[in-house]
Amino acid sequence: MRDLEQRLCLHEACRHVLIYSHVVDTLEYLRVPVPDDPESPIDEYFPVVVHFIQNARDKGQTCLVHCSHGMSRSATFILVYLIERHGMSVLEALQYTRTLRPVISPNVGFMSKLLDLERHTHQLCSVDLQKYRKDRFAAIEELVMLSPANERVVDA
Image (tube, rainbow, N blue to C red; front, side, top):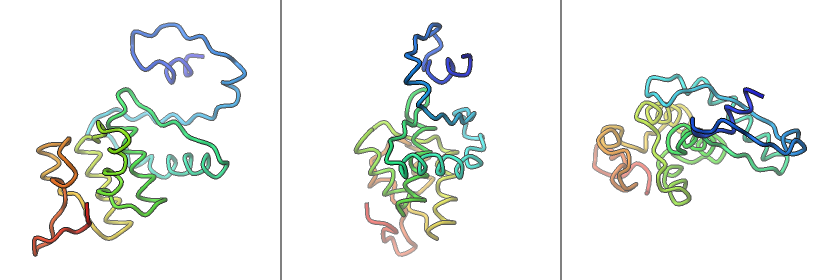
């Protein structure tokens, strides 16, 4: 029950949980113990998270991905899924997810890991990390990485 309390309580003030047990038995959980710290090795969990989400999708089910504020950790995992399984660039995935949840903003360390994944997966870098470092909440068009000829690498 202690582990379940930690998953369901989004705020420290929550000390009591009432659960309809039939529902809990039908849920599959994946706990990812990563603090929202730019130095956290979140990329170590990318493969298992993508597999977990894809497994749910393959069964025709949905998958709730959440963290304390729904801005950085959970956003990072959704972006990873979109990059790996839907072939999106980081910029495209960020643009798409921000249409659904405008506050999405992985911390700078997580964004760096996403850009590493993008380089490895798609051989490109669509977000200018220096611009992102200055303003994580900047409009998508302000984050576009320009090529040496000042052309957009990926259309925003």
